[in-house]
Length: 589
Image 1: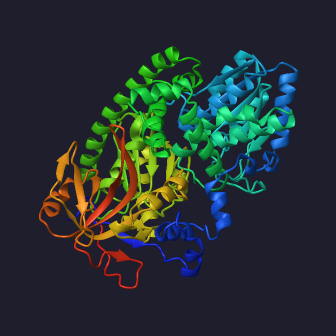
Image 2: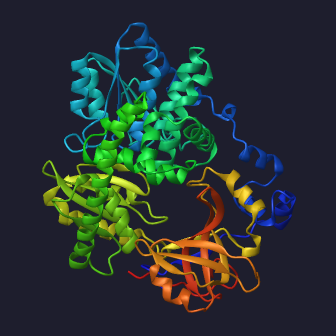
């Protein structure tokens, strides 16, 4: 019963029993208490704070280095009626950040515009073309969002043309900061801001919060912006802990209670009729926003997010939805070609994957890199040709810092940037083979055996009997989920299918699970892309499942459903990280 990879299941350490029991009561069952303690929620007071986020608990924005300077520069710009350009990257984080800052400041000045660089002619981040456009429009201040932390030459170019920069970024700085008027980035070594993991849009929100505080603007004026912060927090895969949990909690609430027309239009295109979750933001809203920049231009996404009425939003939404459909087709076709490229040109025992084809669409190569990791579990870079250069997107496997691996090859590159798990790079075409060789050497020397095996972390082993209203209530209140607070993964051994198992859609497996020790109860389950397990499931032999619990709404009825993450035959020897762990299952490279 192996899928693309035989995954290792690792059980998280058991929490301290006395701490667990201190949390157990009729509204918090044993399983719920164990999950909470695993996540550092070890007392009723801490649990109360976790379950009831409050906007008053947001940090003072003026704890961020350069915040006072940035706010003062905006105040001077408004007082002198200078023109502002709000500049952001073309992805979800950048476009939501631009929509947020532009819409808030537009209430205080009409002398403001926004700019999104073209993905293909300008590339990522600050561009000379964008600065030239700012000069042409008469702007004296550029507020850069989700980019700029390494734009030393661009900031200098702007200064020579009488344009100041306020940089709002969350990426890791280089050795030298740009000589901007203000640089807001909690990852600056000299920045005392207590929370380091805001999205780019989150930094923009903190700037607007600082401006509001300094100018005695009612904090409620900021609340309509929280939906945009929630979308960026979800889609930029930043930890949903600390300040991000507060912002995401109230942002998701805003999205559901009073969605802006652009969001409502996208929900309609995707036929989403239930309350939105972080998962919906990642898989429904985010891809549509991203598709604008991938297929046509990111400016469309900003205009959709700024739309004031549903008629306007639905017209724009149709175009964005069409872009998303085109993106999906490109994604499938290029993934198929890239998998063939791996078969033809990448050594089977390689520790990395680097593939290149000059005709691949630049807008989807990051998505394709993620798809390739599903099939060949190793750090992966997909490259195409753009403006006479090889440009690529990198994605990584759990625990491996692909940014640092690329950094170790920097002598071969024109530029690069990104995070531990995702990065972008540009290099001369004639250095491509040397880069492939060097990147493989670096990965081979630094990746650990554990990092080469796909792994599912198991929060807790439970019986089907423990699934009920009290546990579901706790799981509901633990949202919003995301990195740092992922939806709990449960293990149940020895289940059987009631006879309902069938393959549906594109190789998905639907089941109805029962357990011999729990007569009379059964649970619907869906296992996406796991049709290969059908024969065993139908055989009547027991098997074990990893799953997350979710509520499934259908025809006005809500039921508990198991969303299966992995299936293994039998009941024994499944886990690593417990006392009786057996041998690891090898990765099927």
